[in-house]
Length: 147
Image (cartoon, rainbow, N blue to C red; front, side, top):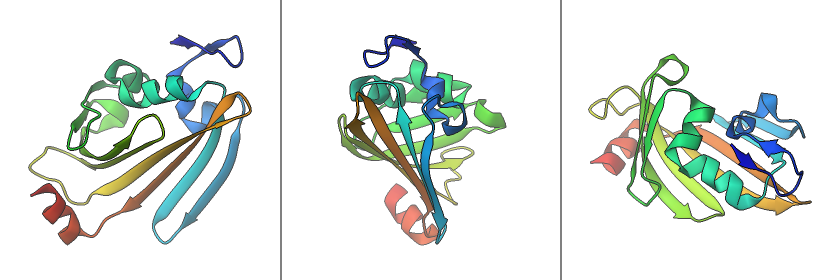
């Protein structure tokens, strides 16, 4: 848990789960297999970036044990989170503005079906607008990307 400089209150990484956000969800778009959510969080961008990229803080959001190397081609493993193990790979990092991962349920030997998740962080009004988009990838593209 980190102290929020923008609110003077304690900010928890669990606030990344849109439903528990005290400022509120500001948008949701669903279509073409893509889901996008925007949330205004009561924390500065470096705090939100840390919650997305530091395994101990990410574990507070996803649950379970998290291993994460937030560098391009870095690996992500979530064990016991939300009842399913997940594996992933970092596709792009532009610290502290954008993070793109691909992930899937199960072990590294069973990647498809894979989804891509993009996190975009923008400072706004003393807080951070977090936009999270997730969409499925074609199985052939996933296999090539992981090969």
